[in-house]
Image (tube, rainbow, N blue to C red; front, side):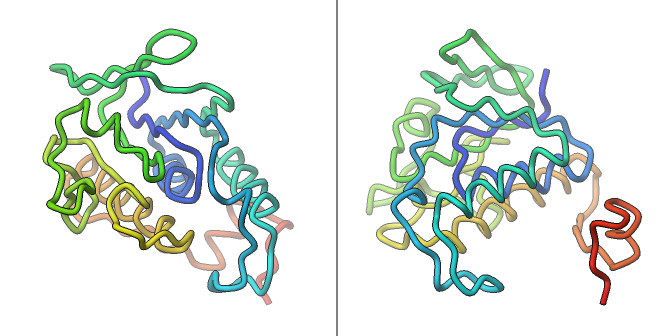
Length: 195
């Protein structure tokens, strides 16, 4: 059983997976690769001068792969159900269970509605500051929680907020993911430029 199942492999979903897997939680991402990023070119993402959206996605996928995320590329999720132990996802290949579910399906709110998440008057998924929905341990991120505010950097931040809340719950205290150059050197050795 995975600890965290993420539905959607755009900036929000992969940001969640990056943080949770990097910090020791078994994480699975189900991704049909329908992200809007394939139609984008980023000039407004902090730290990146200019990058094609598809190239950005490849970089992000490589990053989560480095931390051992079980990335199920091309596997769609057809249903999500709350259980006594967490959540069961029905996929094209069967079922997957996890303690936490993070919905990162862009503006498609069908799974959130199926799960029973409360929607706002604007028709977006209602979340708190940690991106948790009205269903305990179910999170919604990115375009599904915002009316017309669809930016990769916002979505990535939403994914990070969800991940940090999950990590805080798992560790029983406020969790912060802050690395130093020494941490990076230890994790990646000669791949890191510490200058």
